[in-house]
Length: 44
Image (cartoon, rainbow, N blue to C red; front, side):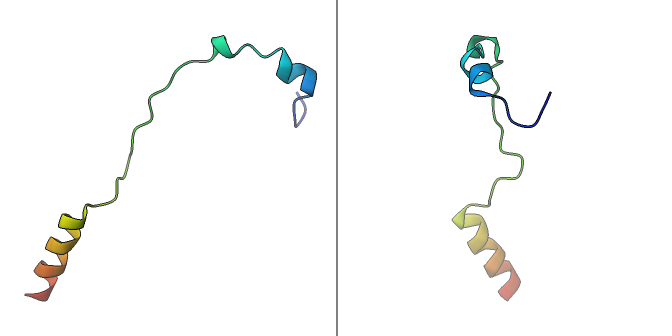
């Protein structure tokens, strides 16, 4: 298998053979409330 697939290979690719995956956020950003609580905890 070489670097990039040719257009012919891309056209005959069967999308129905692909598996559906569920993405999950591994490290979500904190909410504004959580940030405010951290700021207040650091000030006191």
